[in-house]
Length: 458
Image (cartoon, rainbow, N blue to C red; front, side, top):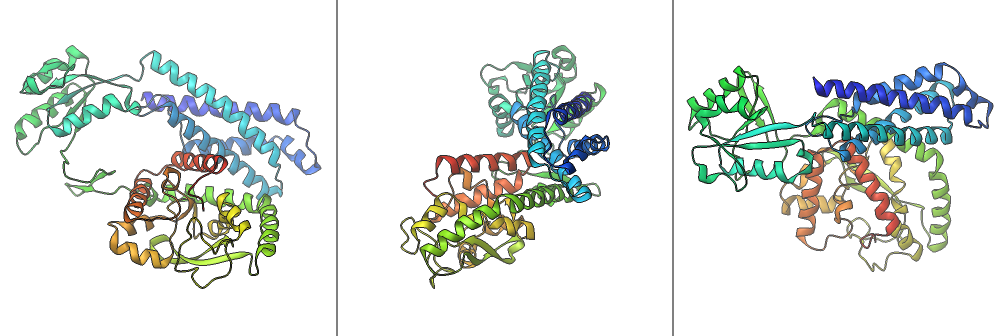
């Protein structure tokens, strides 16, 4: 209930901020073209309201939830602002053939800064008043209980959780500094005494079925949240989900957010809007610059086309600005640091990542996404599918211009097998933990990586 109220307040406040910024800026802004004056009409307010509400519905900002944090608020608010302005700008372009880019950028930036200030204050007030404080107790002291305990006390994401202590039959197994609340039979009496809101049961139901059922009944009688923590020692550390087939509980060992239609739609809309705007505005300038340099440096085409492995293992033709002399090894031999095939201008294109910009055409065509695992040559796909465990899992989503692996040092040449194994591990982590906030983070990290220079960009 509190979370719903917090989201409602955040949505109303965010809408008010966007509308206020819009009303003020359109009075101060000097619209150069007559057509831009359509933004002064009343229906522009309705368009912005609907655009923001759609963005808030798809990417809500929660300042009081269990997992709320300033970092999450920053990412989700940024996504929300970009999505709202993207929908608004796209709607006006399609309906009125109007694109006031400078005004949209100013409106988005001002609204984003103001919304972040409000949401940060809302979060700070919530934390200071301890409105989001969650008092928990852990039942048991097995490996799963200790792993849960270490996560709750060390990860800032769970700072709202306050561990009251442990219920266990062996007091000596309680971690140092934690309170022993009593045996498992004493739970019902201890819950109101310590103000416990959540119980995390780490016992094995097959060993003590009656005791676990008694704990569940006690929690239900006192309206306390009961969570069961299974012992998955020996399993890979990955994101999992639980579902039911009839009355049978089924555990899915790989939870893929991008398998959900809504997430696919949101990501695709962002890809199309961003790539369309980039290709219509900045790309022509990059193309003219690159084309002149490429033609002067060596004979051959401006674009380099190569078959890469894409979504679900399907091949597609990837585009790049050509950075090498035309050669017969292009489809079998990856680039190295001092590759003699590179031209001087091509080396500049690769170091600045300008050679990758034509892939926005691949994004618009639907072969790629802006963020995702980098696609490999078909010969590398066949090779590493045999050598690296779960290599093909990275093709469960569309490949990207940049990805989680690339911004974490796994870019360019893979000299040893462990380099590819690390890249695959990070790509799978991205697939299992995808969110629009994570995509924004990767995008910003990529920009910073390009600006400061990346030694692996060759």
